[in-house]
Amino acid sequence: MATKEVQQHGFQAEVKQLLDIVIHSLYTDSEIFVRELVSNASDALEKARLKQLTENDVYQGDAELKICITTDEENNTLTIQDFGIGMNRDELTENLGTIAHSGTKAFLEQLKEKNGDGGNADVIGQFGVGFYSAFMAADEVEVSTHSWDPAAENLKWTSDGSTGYSIEEIDEQARGCKMVMKLKEDKAEFSKADRVKEILEKYSNFVTFPIELNGERVNKVEALWLKSKSEVTTEQYTEFYKFVAHAYDEPKFTMHFSADAPLAINALLFVPGENQEQFGMGQMEAGVSLYCRKVLIDAKPQKLLPEWLRFLRGVIDSADLPLNISRETMQDTALIQKLNKLITKRFLKFLATQAKNEPEAYMDFYTKFGRFLKEGIATSFEHQEQLAGLIRFESTSTEAGTQTGFAEYIERAADDQEVIYFLTGASRDILSKGPYLEAFKARGIEVALFTDQVDQYVLDSMPEFKGKKLVPADRADIELDDLEAEGEALDASSLAALTGWMQDTLGERVEKVEAGKRLVDSPIAALAPKEAPNAQMMAMMKAMGQEVPTPKVTLEINPRSEVIKNLSSLQQKDNELATLVAQQLTDNALLAAGLLENPQEMVSRMNDLLARVAK
Ligand SMILES: Nc1ncnc2c1ncn2[C@@H]1O[C@H](COP(=O)(O)OP(=O)(O)OP(=O)(O)O)[C@@H](O)[C@H]1O
Image (tube, rainbow, N blue to C red):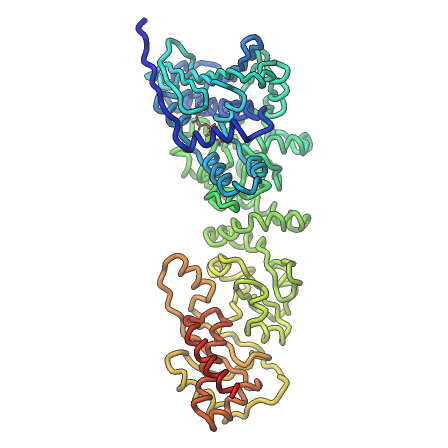
């Protein structure tokens, strides 16, 4: 036959960078390349199985879905062959010449960030680098392949993992991929059957397809999720998690349950040990696969669970699903919606139990994954109440650093307290020093303190919890009981004169000035109107590039405060100085509320005031 053309290609720059890391500095544990390649083979087989269900014409449609591994000590090679989906020419270039998948990209970014402090090991532990890991053990890798598509060519991809690769057409190739690793001299261990068997048993026991090593079956196919809980050990769960999630950490929580009604479900779900989004690696992809009686329907179904549960990993198997369901039509079926609702409820109930029975583990989970629950509150009305019960926060009734929940808040509150008070801000310390809490403290009313940037947004989308309205403690319209306050107050007529004068003096700066009962120690507080966004919300809107007009506040003055009393008499004697003091008090109140727009003006006024005092 005629000689076939060999195409030469260069690697994308990122691939070169990755290969360099993989080959020179990455793993001491080079054995993991076997797992990476077997897991790719298993993915390819799952894709082939789906093609067989959905396509009329699949190349070698009756090929057995299995992985065959061969060791050759004499030639120092290891061969991993699958009869999966294979690759055509474009796919070879795309998949084995560039880095398109998120896992590896994220890995490179993390590495870039951490470079310099020598702390690569912890980053590396969290990722797999997929196919390219073959070059940890091999000088040269050959991938011979035929795609599922009958019209595709028989191809061979070859590379030494340095600058590029070649692709040539070959005569015959079974469907799937056959990877031949020409092992490095010092990696000859991987051409030994016993060594490879040991690795396969360690990592690939749960692979759902048969794995044969030199013709002998090595893995036990275990659909762990179909077993009963009592038959499964913690180690098995952990290994299974690592396999399905391509993870390297230990699961934080494992939820294994089955139900017969209203749907037949077997689910095995894991909360990972770490939240990858916390490492700034962009949004995670959904990671719970959908099976029907052990047959994979979709590895990453988008609507099987709400988006805010994208951190979950694992398997949901429902015998009620039609087997030949296609990905496109599956997403919106009533059945998927039912599964979604049912499993979400069940999982939230599971979390509530964890919170009760294992509060420490729950808090650790909450610290890492709490943002997802908040996202749920803001986007998923249906589960809001359940989610709200899982939210944790500090409050004026907890020690600094100790968190509580809404249910406990209600338990502690007086029977006639109809609402839940809260305050949002940058930190507990800042909130405690502000003017808003003192009125509540004086009356023994608990205020929940929220200090995460997203909290205001989240709380705005949650009007109540168990029938109790959520009320921000810095709003002007809060009515608190009268309190017998200590200290002599300014008399009524002076007070009326003072508020009137301040109102005129401050003009447009404020909505109104009034004497209030809520202040105990502070002379003055700026209260936001009921409907206005508060300071935290405004900061968030500004960060998102939105125009946010500063709301006009109501100033509440404390008639028992020394400054206020002095201001009242000063105003009679020295209107100019009194005006400076009133303006300054206003700025102080706005500053405490996080609403001060123009601090420069305040500084020059302060200097004026100081000059007068220091005379
Ligand atoms: N045995 C195979 N059969 C078919 N396609 C494969 C095979 N191995 C790899 N590929 C293709 O090459 C792509 C890149 O593989 P690689 O192992 O580098 O990353 P990945 O498996 O997508 O991601 P990761 O390993 O980070 O989870 C795969 O997404 C897949 O499309």
